[in-house]
Length: 126
Image (cartoon, rainbow, N blue to C red; front, side, top):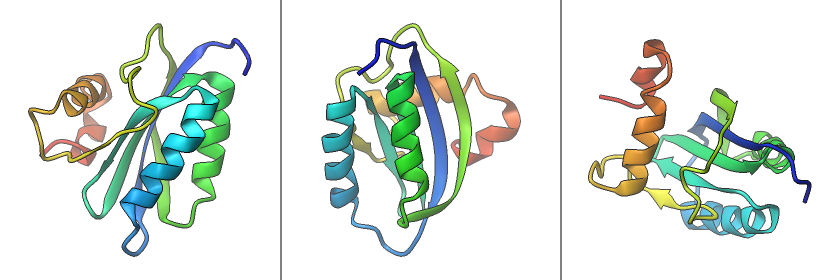
């Protein structure tokens, strides 16, 4: 793995059918653990929101795999930038319920998303 800049990419997408989230999570943890990627996956039954963070080259490769995954469509990047530190450093990937406002991971994601333009907030905030 290269020693390149730390990158954080956040995207959302629409689920195709009824994906097995345990399968999605297991493959994410396996692949991300090998690539030095951490992050968070939110899924409400219809939409995914995922944060990928790690070495820029690893995040790029992971996102390329995601873009070819048939379990979702309409993939839209909503944030892609260099960061000084990880927001989810202790998870190779974790699945969280976006309705659970008290959850630390959801709070961290909400804090990051609040930095985005107001026209993007409707994807995440009620």
